[in-house]
Length: 194
Image 1 (spheres, rainbow, N blue to C red):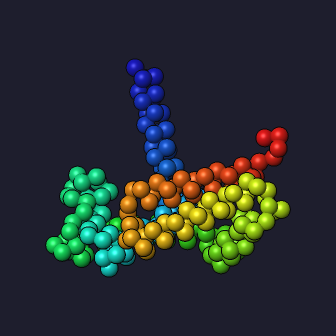
Image 2 (spheres, rainbow, N blue to C red; image 1 turned 45 degrees about the vertical axis):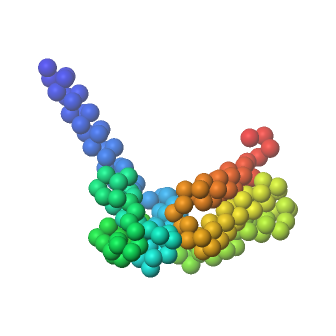
Image 3 (cartoon, helix red, strand yellow; image 1 turned 45 degrees about the horizontal axis):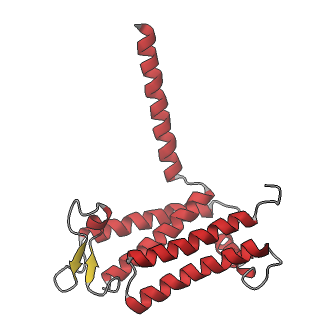
């Protein structure tokens, strides 16, 4: 009987440690996770601002509560003519995205060079140099740079031209291009023997 109780306590302690480590990982992200937080948070804030000014879709306004819960709480899309310009879910969504950006910047700022070093490293990256030359990282890095740049330019162009910032078809093309670029960037860092 004592062994069973002791095992239960050990399992409960292990589960509690797992939950604490997950929460601490989410609240204090690694450098890589902080970069993802920054990208996702900034993208969400862009969409929220576009939604507030009525430029996210030609005929609809987005209810973030409806979209994120797959219309469990309410409809995800409302007609621009009848839907309110600002609702509570806009505020909550912007708060969530802003929180991701804040957590990311806190982690990035804890680096040696801080936020300025992070943004200057993005500008001075070998990825962008390889757009014009294969000498830096070979054909894989050049292909990666072109795929990533093409995905970003396609999304921005299509969003501006057709107000299709939340169009699934646009997401498919953009994600295919950017993920192919990320994959090729990873391949460019591998040795021939790997």
